[in-house]
Length: 319
Image (tube, rainbow, N blue to C red; front, top):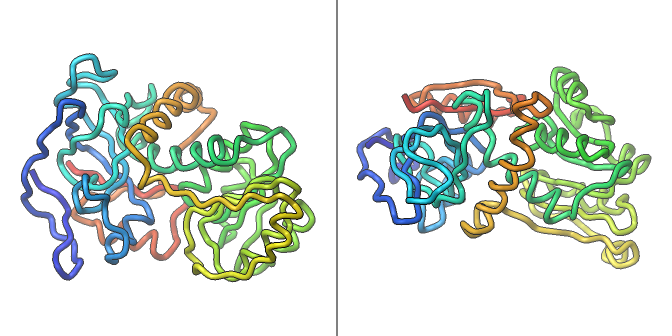
């Protein structure tokens, strides 16, 4: 088979690699599409390798057709599926633990389905498991609201009855996230988010930005608030008043999806299938596709994310 590998200079190379050898508890998938995530950009830059048990090239979520499956698995040969993977999604085939593979939502295309596993697992994991959920009337703060994770987080938080604060970087993105239900939208190029957080203290924050401003924003959390860090795109250093943490009983939580066990990931994927798939089919949840590129144009696809142009997901097609 062929895969979009990285050479010794970290350049993309579409080349022949050995076919995956399916283990007894794995599903072999013919990959039709793989979505692009910022973790892929980090891997391309040489600073976020796949876990050792996964192929050492990019790709964290795929969709395609089952070629082989274990006896008794929830999917069988010929099924259209999507899967959460630890790496190696930019390829013609991939072997995935059976629990991390689920049928695509009814009525959804394979391109659309490729955009779901990573972002929706990230959001579900952090809002439901790490934060313990949201109550109607809670304020939820998510950075980068027009990203794949941001758009998913806005929708899930609104389903739970929360008010949503988010940041974006253009007028077009402001209009889009407001249509999804965001209540307070701040253009981070023009406005100071601290004023909005002071006026509407969040119960839960999902932060992929970090940076120096994070510590000042943290102090505006409600008593018992949960601030979840999933990335530090603006830098890893900030100044935090620790007295605020214990006086307000704030939980500062570090969270990643990629390093979790197959069992943990399988549990999250099953929860998505059970709880969210009917909502996608009914049109109550959407996965916005910003652009679709053939795998040969992977550099162009990555460039869209690097320039922060996307509203939603960028997807690569393998065939």
